[in-house]
Image 1 (tube, helix red, strand yellow):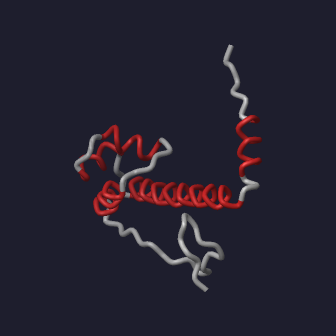
Image 2 (cartoon, one colour):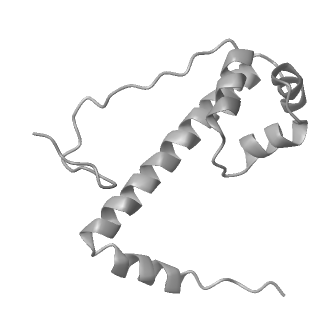
Length: 115
């Protein structure tokens, strides 16, 4: 019989902590960073598929171990930027950072807000 994890305790703890504006800002910043990483990795994986490359093929192109490339595309990870850049180059793609259309209203991680 498989035992189910009680995630309710965690959810209640996070909900209570989110009432603290500083915690909420940090939490939202971390969540946004994960979304950005996931988006970049998903786009690279789509390019890999469009190119007709297996993960092992891509690993050979970028000079990495095939298992590290498989993990990158299948597990939630925080890849090093050098690996992401190598994959983009191997796929003939560019990675660009765009400023948001609207400036964030609040500073984060100790940065000073500018008007």
